[in-house]
Length: 325
Image 1 (cartoon, rainbow, N blue to C red):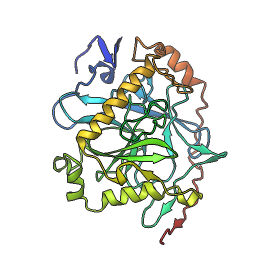
Image 2 (cartoon, one colour; image 1 turned 90 degrees about the horizontal axis):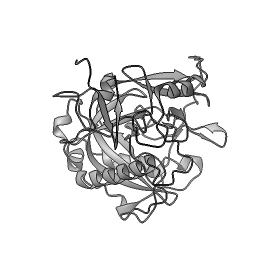
Image 3 (tube, rainbow, N blue to C red; image 1 turned 90 degrees about the vertical axis):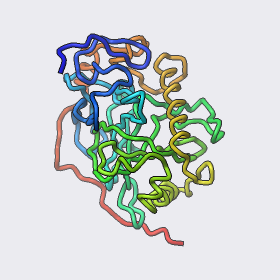
Image 4 (cartoon, helix red, strand yellow; image 1 turned 120 degrees about the vertical axis):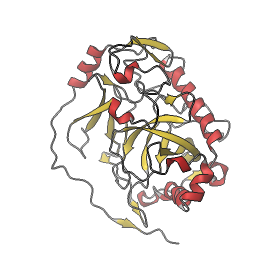
């Protein structure tokens, strides 16, 4: 490991940096062969799991607090189809965890609706989320911009991603993934893209290059994915979700264009060229962003959050839902 590389290019600005994660130029790789991005980032729990106050904050390898939304690079290697994915929900779990886009440094928290923590239902034959679920950093689905493909505006979040490999990842892991395709969910009139990807370190990753490979090597998985997104809100008393393109998955090339577009929206957001509303854009690495803060300011933001942990917390009781017609 070299002792010093002076600058980090993130998006548009350049920052002085001391961590391995920060020393990589925008889009650069940590080295040849399979990458294990997890080593470049750490997480820190604050509050009690399965409680409204629980937060999972991110640090780089130097121990400096960062935003997983704004400070983790989107791409791992400009020459390859390789992206960073922030894992919010491990496969088979039910807690609806997400990047807190409206909070400083955007920790992962559990979603709350009507005063209650949210859990996705178990809909037969599935248990919780059927993939490792998360988001691509440095992307934003602009709620004021109508998508030319769906004729609906974005859902105001980073773009979602479903990782279909064989390993169950932990909440807060940052993994390298290959993009394979995309599904266009229309959620209450908003475009909510769902990327399909596989970890580059999966034993079968070399077989997967595009969406047709998922159909070939994991038959039934895309159909299960479509049904999961169609029905997952029905147990809450809501109607089935709808999709653009009649629920057909688009290929890798299409998906990469969507990623490019949402990345441009994110850059406009960080440069205050788009109205982010309540979105919190505080960051430590995009130096020419008006929302940039110092490491000391970031630390003071985190230290104001309660740090007590109680591992004896309670998770919602598990039930099965049968939606046969």
